[in-house]
Length: 143
Image (cartoon, rainbow, N blue to C red; front, side):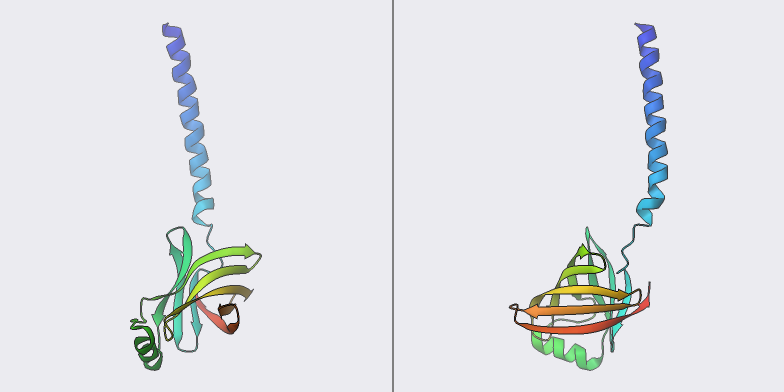
């Protein structure tokens, strides 16, 4: 029975070494699997940070003009700084995404689409009731 235990012990040792090696090799790939949308984006005086929020990406407001803050406060009672403007970002194809967009001045959520036109430009479109749509262009501030 002892020789069998030695063989099983050696197999387990090889398995653990192989598994550890795979984990070490995969770690840099997982760490660098960053979405091209991640980073800071700006439209006028409104600035957002697109980053992971759980398993998906979302866009959180970092800066806004006093006028934008006041409109949001009147429309939805939302403190604009720190609010999630874009959430549930899902990739739908090369450089295209679907998301939920919050309109704080109207206290509404719209279904939207994001197209990464270039490394530093996003085209964001939101539609309410599938009829009333608005498109905006965002410029990258930093990665």
